[in-house]
Amino acid sequence: MDQTIVTVHGEARREVPPEQAVFSVTVSARDRDKPTVVARLTERSAEVGKILDRYATAIERRETAGLHVYEEYRRRSERSAVHSGSLTITVTVADFDPLGEMLARLASGDAISVSGPWWRLRPGSRAGADVRREAVTDALDRAREYAAAVGSELDRIVEISDVDAAGVHPMAMRAAGGMAAEAEDSAAFDLDPRQQTVEARVLLRVTVTEPTVLRP
Image (cartoon, rainbow, N blue to C red; front, side):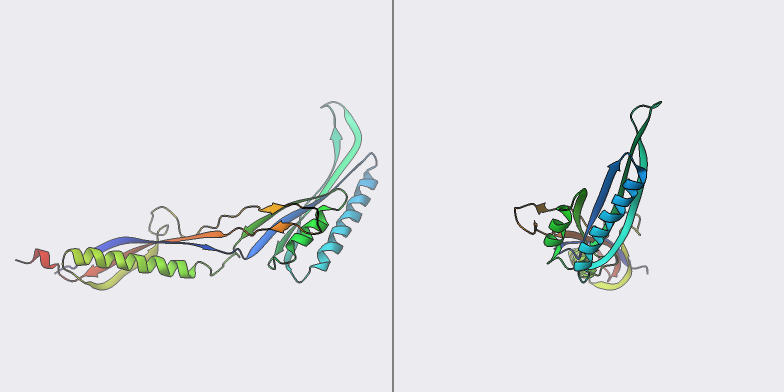
């Protein structure tokens, strides 16, 4: 005799602290002389590098995200003698304590712009492990409720899978980040790391004992 199968979804959601902050630093230069633009970019990027070196223990990664040196055009048919350039560095920080001071020092530099920080969980983070376990527990509780409603008990698990793997709406894990910084007349920005939303949704299939409500 085929056993009755109960199929349910389990869900869980939790707010967790971010594990990383990412920001970008862009140095720029503009001059009629192209070599001067290149020289200024080199000098200013070196200044940024010196500042970042002071916080090396807090920085996990720093990468050159883009270098642009180009001639400006006033009209399509008119060539200008002005050259512009920019160089962008992306920085990933794991220690948030010196972050506000680091950003303030960078932002105070000449022809230097700062964007961020963007808060996030570390790629491959295990922060969602507890949430996934909670989602499975939620699914088991629901299955027990359905089984009890017909006088059955859970027998064995047939399948546990992420919802996206099961072809339903993908909600396995999501991290929402944003910028939260306020400038003050001090040596450091006052930053409030934004909590990250972690969600999990699972599909659970279990067999149950013979329902008593169907017995003669």
